[in-house]
Image 1 (tube, rainbow, N blue to C red):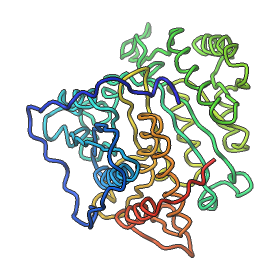
Image 2: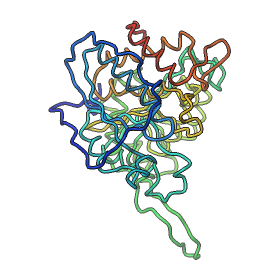
Image 3: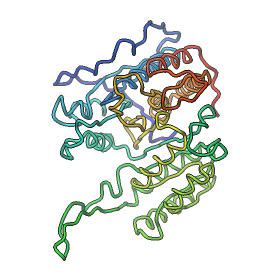
Image 4: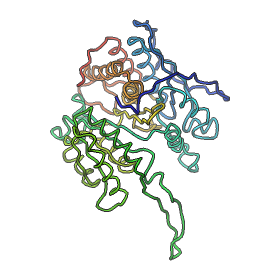
Length: 409
């Protein structure tokens, strides 16, 4: 368990908010049809801020919320949920993508679960009024600096990968991406004019020692809990910021003699992820390289609809979200794959609350549901049962309630 992801101390109640937010409408069929009785008296209580967001976000968040509620009732955990606006829906409601009340609620909770943000409606907004700006502000406000993205090819979905079976089968890696530094946030940045009078745009790739040390420490700890191999990806043959990165990571490795450290240039890493992804266990890299490589790694699995992520800091609540977008073209049509959000809820339990057993219950239920042949359209293949978001969620709940034996390594 990473120290950066644990929350201790007094639980702070969510304060009332100055504006009235009506949670996004979810068709009644997306909710549990029956009330399930708790089999374990609640011994722990956690407050969770839900940010359904835009597009398919409300649909997948509804499924994940039900999974958390049922799992909690079986594991003696009580959840208090607080739905707040963020993204495009917040722009329409309040005029900004991240209202102060939403950030306040998130900070006061034990963990934050996000659905998806964005949509065609807001694509032409000015930068400060784009839904994506709200996500950057949320990450900054929560002080989460480490993004953990697992990419595992499940045996049930190996044929959904675009890679050959022999290449994709058995892939299980974790990308640890630095989230709040580097070229996305470095200064100076902006627009100007060069000595020839031509307009230019410029950004700065910069990392302080403490920023590299803290993300590297998270990565070493993560690798230690996996298979003990860590690959640090940089561009140290060209970039001074990467030279600094490599030196700091190498120095820190002395504290982790049980973890095998290697270094790889980012262009080679991009190639190796396609050529031989099984060589990787844990990858640590900067913001922009991590942004690209984690998306590349996700497609090895066959669908981004299956992949969760966790963003954690040194203290305070973590942010948990599926890596897929808001998919406005299928929103409200019961076509979304909710499993990435359900697995994000499992990461919330594991990395955000330290509830390992509850997390494993959800993870095992997802595997059991896939074993039974249920597939949404993004992972469907002949011989399986095509279902929508609602039915996939119901099948996961059945598997959770059946107390599926945990079959995870």
